[in-house]
Image 1 (cartoon, rainbow, N blue to C red):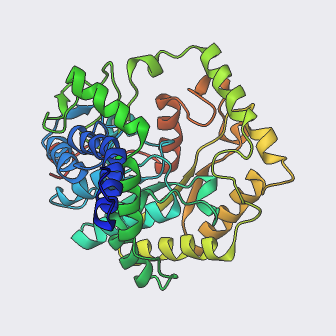
Image 2: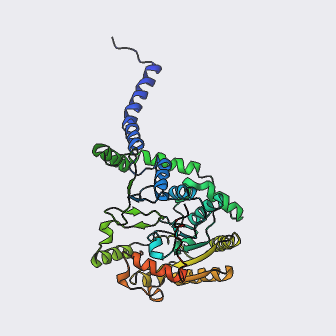
Length: 379
């Protein structure tokens, strides 16, 4: 005789089916969190370890996948006095080191930096009352695009909220929910689960393993130097001119170009935010300086003459106008011709080779001061 089905039995069957369907997702999420190859779930502890090694004078190999904003917060929190010079900006200036610039500095550049990132990193210094004496800011075009914000600052949104409040800029929504959503999405991401499983199998990069430290400046992998700057890994350092040309063609094939989605004009809001930040820096005793990094000679003309988006010349003029109003000097240019660089000075479509970055920075900074023997990074 067939057993009679009951609501309770039907509920149990549904529960078991759902559990069976969810089990792979739950297992994959557990592997992602446990292995965490990009240190996204153990980022604060991992970045604290890297910051400790940096202020202790070590270089750290392959740190590109960690939360760079969190690392900057940990790095700045580890300093004991204001640096004579801090470098703010994107990956376009992250290769600038103390040796290249000919003076002591801390490089606080972060990949894909937005104007909110610049505000946040300056707030790290303000909160510690360690405002640098000089700040060289690489202002990239997309920082003036109100539609651009990759929200890399989410993990440090409280500091961003604090400085925006002090500047009387529109407040941002709490980043807690957005950060949590991002982490939950990553946990179940097939790509991250697969990478985590591969790393677990080969045992190459578990969260429990310490960062790879060295005193060598150039290594096989990308290296974070003790002053915060980076050196490229061997493969990128040895790129041929043909590889650079391929990268330029790929960059030109993408529309809109990086950071230009919705970028029709420099809005009053972004203009005011940059202006208020520069005024605040000067008021608090820092000397801000702006440097504009050029685009590749084959990239600049089509970007500058695209009728669908604001031109690079117009953005540059706005920045120079803001700087003039706030008493801040501007060096460099988005135009490779005005910046005095050639094809051979680029490693890809938008990044200068480290030697060319150093030349641009030295022009912006002027003559180097007398070296301070016991104040290299003010640790």
